[in-house]
Length: 231
Image (cartoon, rainbow, N blue to C red):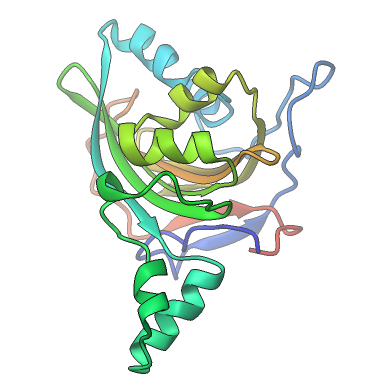
């Protein structure tokens, strides 16, 4: 089952515009067309595939640092069935043994779990400047990667670098709260290394990331989405 994240809150009245995003960058395809309504700097951010922290560090001329708000193991696959059984008061000793512990620090990495999922949420700062928050759902297929996520709380970029995997990148949707440059905007994208890890990520960038914005925030906005996605 594909992983995804629910649409941003309070966007039910936003205009939804179908838009065909390029599926991924390749050695010969390095251009990703984006919708109108974003400034040149915002477009650079929206299509950055693996060096966003370095790019923004250069812009602000300060190091980045991450605040991890959430890094939780969540049930999937057979574990979901166990959870249903628990709700029906039909616990067995075996179910208790197999029930995942949401405290990732206490996860038994010796278990042979091949389809585990994490929900993650971080804040990204550059100096004292909060630049964006990132929500992600991460499906882990590889035991070593599971260990990195569960015990060390590595960032996703660090994990791909550590594993020496170059993930495939696909932009799924972009959106803006309002209609003016400088207002908050976001992007949804996926990173995938087959047989190792699949990630669905939403990065929400703060108002005034580049351009100062002083007007009253609009209650309307726009979402551009890929009509071929089944999420």
